[in-house]
Length: 46
Ligand SMILES: [Zn+2]
Image (cartoon, rainbow, N blue to C red):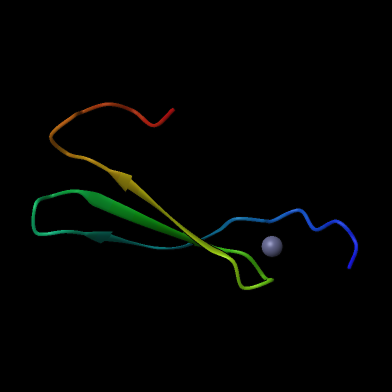
C-alpha cells in the first residue's frame, strides 16, 4: 500500500442525552472518527 492520507467526510451529527454534540467522520478507506463537543464546557475545539 502507498501512503494514504485520510479524508474526513462528515458522517452526521448526533446529540446525546446530556446535550453533548457528537460529530462523526469517515474516510473512504473505512476509517472512522468521532468528535465530541461537550455542552457543559463551552470550549471550542482545538
Ligand atoms: Zn483513509
